[in-house]
Length: 363
Image (cartoon, rainbow, N blue to C red; front, side, top):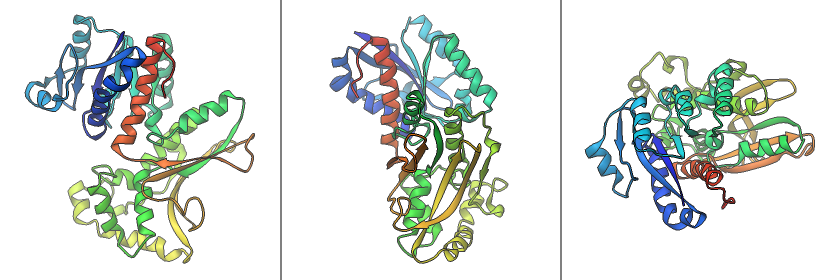
């Protein structure tokens, strides 16, 4: 039986869900497929817990009691000293710190699975360098959750390309948090700031919700889609409408934003007043491949349209292609949440494990 050794960077909401799903699936699924996933190292922003075997169900207590400060070189030394093989680095952070170590990890035998979308939305030069490194060292780099959490968005784009179809346009609601905010706004008279507070309490937004409201997270997803379609885009090529009032943007602290969050209501109220009674607001991203134009903005749509009927944190991706004509390939489903994202990461991890163990796909 093959042993896949996972070094997990990030043990927050998504990372902890990944660990728990691995522990459960090892007993119920993976053993039957001829491989076992061990997690000998888990890492947060400053500390690492090392275990040459694997984590157990008491991993949180072990991390609290036995974690130590680390450098990426320490991790590489540990896996070499213990002769750990079939190495996969899983990046469940939202930080550039680990991204800066991707090339070094690849050089030392690691495959990469990334929930973190930073690597794919940095400069195109780095984007290309990373892929050249992956090819040169015969490694794998999977990142299906970068767009749509657990939804098969990027895999669908690749399938269309590989079948000889030509993708003409991609359009949709790409943010689970913004989908929730505007779905809730369309259901009643609650002020936007109140809905935002509710979304934060549910864990649907980033700790600093301006990351969501600025549109930058959606823009990064659109950038990743553009690059999947072979467009050499940079982030600045995307026209982005921010929903954060100028007086509450990055020039203010998070504490100041929290204290003045009611000022958001005036901004959003302007959009609410401009729509008709049978319309709702949706934050939509669109890429026109032929014209090489990309934009992210708040628009009004009919209540009875596919966009208007979205509920909860659901995302909607519409992929227009030559073969499908005016009827797009539509992908709808949960676009936020720790469990669905963790499941998407686990599927990427399992795909690598299966290629190493040379077994057929279970999913």
